[in-house]
Length: 86
Image 1 (cartoon, helix red, strand yellow):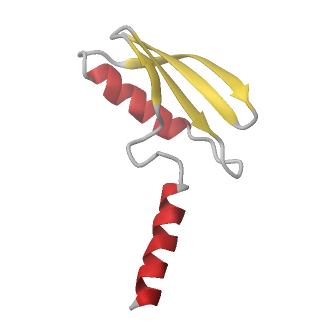
Image 2 (cartoon, rainbow, N blue to C red):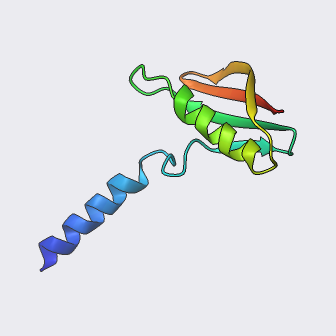
């Protein structure tokens, strides 16, 4: 019984170490006119599809669609995407 609970705590620790992408990349700013999203690259994979989907969903909440205006690197393997809601 004890090894079962030890396995659960290890699995829980592993899951909590994953990036918070269960709900998509994190939104760092949204004002109804624009949305800023931060995302990292892991193992050379570009998260642009997830970022675009999150921006579209966010802009859709105010009846608009998202258009990518800027992408900038804010630290190694971490990018900030700026979308205008039109």
